[in-house]
Amino acid sequence: MVISSLADGILRSAEGVGDRISEAFFEPVIRLGVTGLARAGKTVFITSLVANLLDRGRMPGLAAVPEGRIDAAFLQPQPDDTIARFDYETHYGNLTSQTPEWPDSTRAISELRLSLRVRPSGLLAGLQGPRTIHLDIVDYPGEWLLDLALLDKTYDQWASDTLSWLDKRASAQGYIERARAVDPTARHDEPLAQDLAKRFTAYLQIARKEGYYRCTPGRFLLPGDLAGSPVLTFAPIPFVESSRRGSLHREMERRYEAYKSKVVNPFFRDHFSRIDRQVVLVDALGAIHSGPQAVEDLRRAMAEILGAFRPGRNAFLSQLLGRKRVEKILFAATKADHLHHLQHPRLTAIMEALIRDARDRAQFAGADTTALSLAALRATTEEMHSHDGRELPCVRGRLLDSGKDAAFYPGELPEDPTQLLGPAREGATSWLDADYQVMRFAPAQLTLSPGVGPPHIRLDRAAQFLIGDRL
Ligand SMILES: Nc1nc2c(ncn2[C@@H]2O[C@H](COP(=O)(O)OP(=O)(O)OP(=O)(O)O)[C@@H](O)[C@H]2O)c(=O)[nH]1
Ligand SMILES: [Mg+2]
Image (cartoon, rainbow, N blue to C red):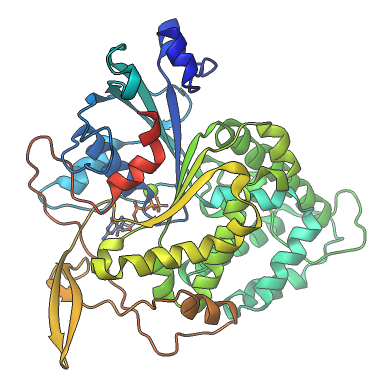
């Protein structure tokens, strides 16, 4: 038994998990990171994944399920005492109640342990009894990965980069004028620093609403208990040749460095570095709806996020991770139930194209990667409608705003993703010949039979890619 556990190479003894030696030695742990930018669908994904692993009737694509090897699945206390527990019961309760509701935004890291009792397959099947495999699911905002880029930049580099992209945006002109009007060499003045930080944060919020994704520093929009602290009270101001101690510029620089060392570093050290498998959720349809600029910003955000999975590029990360690597990364376009399944391959192709550049530059240091489109919680049904002599593949669902039940044709995604990504890259401000409908569906009312989890699209395929090989 010991030999086979060692042989499958997934033994983890240094997890600090509980104090039972047997657990540390014989029960493998898979740490699954779930990330994505704001509203990408992280909370719904985790809730539905857990529900569908507890009740596996809709998971034929997870090989161990049809093979009948999962004897049981159950939630357990998580191993990390200082991370919030992912509030599975509340989210599941809201999604499956008589008046189902989507979850509220979650703005920090959280964790949940799901344990699976699995019988071995293949040669070991007859020799070994069932064993327990722990799946530690860690939910964290994708914005925190974007912060990695800050580690390579000094305050002045960051400030001048940030000001140069703000310069091109009409809605940032108010902030720019304010920042240009200050004298960076004047004595530091706390109310002024707070005012600048407040205005800069307000602009980031507007940028987020306008569909921009690269709204860093990440904690400015997701401050949690750091709100109001000096590490979040800085902002980009124009570069100066040299500044005196005690000047506004010097203090901004000091706080920026503190943000890097006290906020960014600890996240990578304590959380990111321990992840084995990762899913990156992307609301590609949302970006397409927002327009070409949002798509281009999403593409760049993805490239930055993916930088974190190529640690060779970043000295701090290489040193931190040593030889440890994320073994598998799944890039998933979420909310695929907004489209008829005939269009799903096109959505997947767009997802692949969004990450292609970053992916081609380095094959993620050996990580196994794939892209797919999924819906963690299916809110629609499909139907065909004839319109002007054409058959249009539609989806039907209850609209979130009006509560009305309606069938929708969301517009046709191009077969060739470059038809979207090309104009986006070239700076187009609107789509030329296509109109992509925005849709917000309410979660569907469910009646679930015993042993059957909530309806989804390809969540089982996602689970197979992420953990199937270890079950
Ligand atoms: N139709 C459909 N909508 C979805 C699905 N998953 C997420 N959504 C929509 O996307 C919204 C955001 O989903 P969340 O799971 O809360 O996203 P998140 O990434 O946790 O968002 P933050 O916590 O704000 O960062 C939901 O309120 C739904 O409107 C899905 O599978 N199908
Ligand atoms: Mg959330």
